[in-house]
Image 1 (cartoon, rainbow, N blue to C red):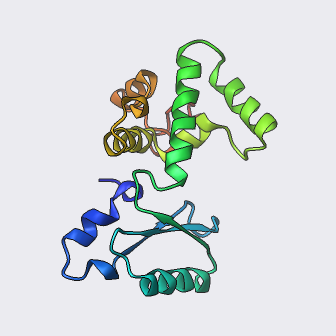
Image 2 (image 1 turned 120 degrees about the horizontal axis):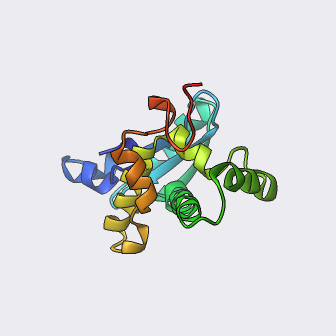
Length: 169
């Protein structure tokens, strides 16, 4: 299981004191990104949530609470957008560089969704989409066939030097 998709209830359920369990979802690169999602489990005590929020602030992070649902908040919104970018490419609506440029300039995103997918790792994106599909009981969250094809081919993004884009040049 990938770190950004571990259900807090699953972790807490294995312990004697589930009220003491709270998740922290950091964003990469961790030294640069300010946000940390503080994930409350079903049994998380409010005092524990507050302690984790305070700890996050002391680490220089902006802590925002969310509840334990598949994908939390960030991946629940981000990953379907990335997946739709793969469908847009697969269906011939535009080439990857054009999709990314439109999203950067039109939506003021610092990088386009396909470039971001390469940065995250295409295998991680596909995994999170499957976690969303299973956790939300909806096939609409399954990874785009184009995304799955790249993962199967070993084109995982920056970490392999080739994903949507070729980084070996």
